[in-house]
Image 1 (cartoon, rainbow, N blue to C red):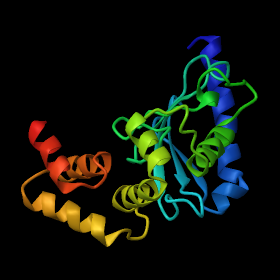
Image 2 (cartoon, helix red, strand yellow; image 1 turned 135 degrees about the horizontal axis):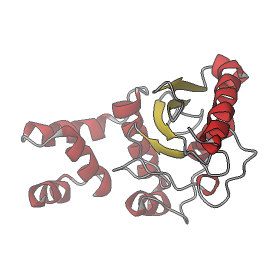
Image 3 (cartoon, rainbow, N blue to C red; image 1 turned 45 degrees about the vertical axis):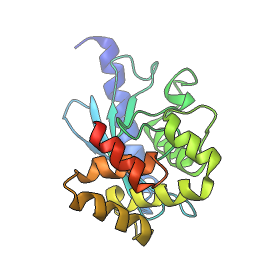
Length: 203
């Protein structure tokens, strides 16, 4: 193992302990687990922040540590599906400056997890990762909230959301469409059953 990778491992071990001992972990706000023994991949988890559509949900993150850490940022994506302007509803890719060009070597796993939690509470729709979500966020904030809440319920274990949306999902699922595809189609077609059905049939 080269010396560079060694720096990364020492550093991650220290940061891993920092997260475990943090006040946020004791309050169940953030969490991190090892995926492999050599510290190149971690599994993060953040709680949906209060007073947001994500409240009550728990979000799993894939965290890959480059050999050049901490001089380059970790590669992070959401494993748990989420409806948010800065996170891809398809891949979980994240648009956040500190994970790209605003990364600084002084940042740690803990600051990454807390920054992602803050992103859930304060979306940046003008720098979107998911254009469909960002458009809904700007044009129909109430529908965005309801949709994000529904995704939080279905995928992140948050409390139950809009019964109207749930009925529409059940209706299309009963026609034989797959549930995840139905949720994406309805979410991106403003919960209009007809246009969502057309989209599902065209795929």
